[in-house]
Length: 334
Ligand SMILES: [Zn+2]
Image 1 (cartoon, rainbow, N blue to C red):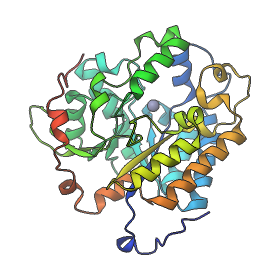
Image 2: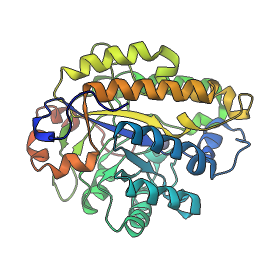
Image 3: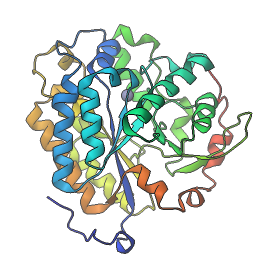
Image 4: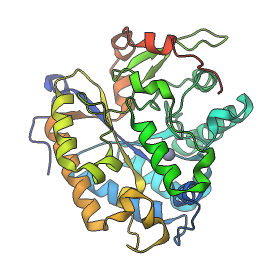
């Protein structure tokens, strides 16, 4: 189903912008988080789950942004997917080299390596540098921003406002002793602004060239609405939240994970813990399609790269919301 609203002239389309993001977290990441084997190989995400995403996006004229983990770019299946996604007009962005669960506590050299390696691999693969980053564990600090600024990044999208990070910390640690060292977000995200804003990193260079694009949450309750939570709370809650977001300027970010459309056995070892895998593939596919239909009916969906190609992106984010980040101590390692 295509959007019912006219999209042939983007300038005439007054709907707020929304970016569809997909975190491409492979099964080895979930294995580490939950301390169990996946009983599936590393190629299934690229050969099975992501082509399904490309098909549902193509059916709706959606161009999305896939956040790629650098370590997987060594896989032929991953590179094939990246090439297919780029041909279809999707954006590839940086989701760190090895999705470290304790990135927050790592040295500057480790953080620099985690951003630089996939940056170089994606640049070589795509013929152009990525401009967007999301950290594993919804975490951002001044050291990460410094590396991103040096590499010319335009946006980072790791902040998940509201209580979501507390909920995810609680859930993961209730399910897995292996998750003890994993960090989700920062406690102050409870009051983080929902609006995008220009980050003023307190770095030696003192530049302010990166936009924070927070992951969208329910505008009334600030509860998370991305796909993982839609399985728990139902699509009705998400659609009501999208109605609320439609009344705000945006741009908004709606987040899926690659595993949402993975064909995985109902009694596979990860199905005990990983929320999406507790549903059948048919049920997950129906949920993703329902959410995408609701999104294209309400928003103008473009890749995040297109937002920055529209010219005035930097001006529109110079808002007071950045005061939150200026007052966020420590934007230094914890
Ligand atoms: Zn991830």
